Length: 458
Image 1 (cartoon, rainbow, N blue to C red):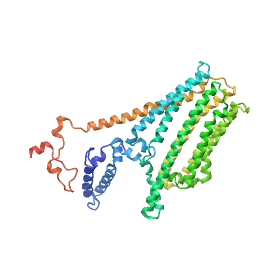
Image 2: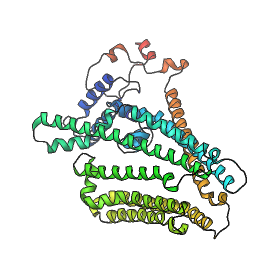
Image 3: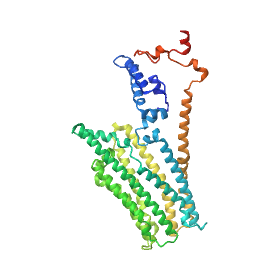
Image 4: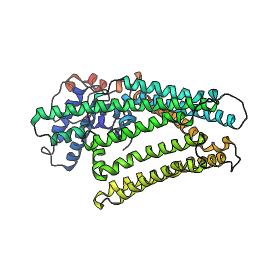
């Protein structure tokens, strides 16, 4: 399956600019000719399936737009979670804006960590309010984007979850009227849930913005207690706890997606609730320990203060092991699915190990620096952070947008190659009036058509 964007049009014997009516006429003509009831040739049966497959894709406006840009590989990926955004032409501009925003944010984070390193290492005497300016720019951009997302209307295509609606049709026994009422209730609940999710993320970013302001003021020597500095983080983690609890309750009530509801049923309500809220509880404990350590209430070492973060790493590793056991429990009848799931879990393990190395290495060095057991500059400790943020800045801000532009240029070149030059117009296949008005269903697409030169001879 490659990125050929003309193969299906060739099967139907039409051009890429064919109208839906032309596609329908060609499909009916070819389907009538190669239908298995009309021909016993196995090749005709295969060709009939190819014709039906081509018409199924090209008759759908959305699938046709994806096929014209990415070929059949884009159509096959359209149903996936990532493909529904990456291979949807209507979402392409949004995807480019998101990637460019992430790239610019990573660059600002690099500037922030650079300012912070030289300030903590004593190379400059800037105010911490100046050091935090790049971080506040990132916060402001995130706030604006989330506010626009909350104010924008919810797309009806997002509410039309066919799997959920079909499942409701099977469960509903009150006839068509009952099914329609059930669909409307499900749409309203999803619309309300999406609004609440948008507000939830907006409040989370607002809490982080306030936390960044308070920690900058605390670093400048303002008379602010550590508990007050971490109060926005406590509020954020409280919201996260509430969000996860509501999500599990909605899944138990059948108001969430089929996949998540099946997961809750398989793992059990209390186990799902615990695994969903455990990370938030760890971060709340971690925030309390840091606040008490900063205020001098307890004399714990910084290694004990950061212990919840190490527990969080073990928690993530346990989740990956749980997924690996699920994959191992699949039967041999699901061999293809088992191989795909195993490859996905192996990728998760590799990403986890690389991420853990880049996160816990500077964390251990930072703990040793805070405890006074290691005299090392902060700029050296943050080298892994610089590497990761630089990688994401290059990928999101340069590589991926350039790749999408190259794909667009290839499409333009492909469309230009289909045009016929002026000195070859006499060789172009132009159908005669008799051929254009012919309605014989037995006419094959492989039969020659009259060109302008042969029409002149006739």
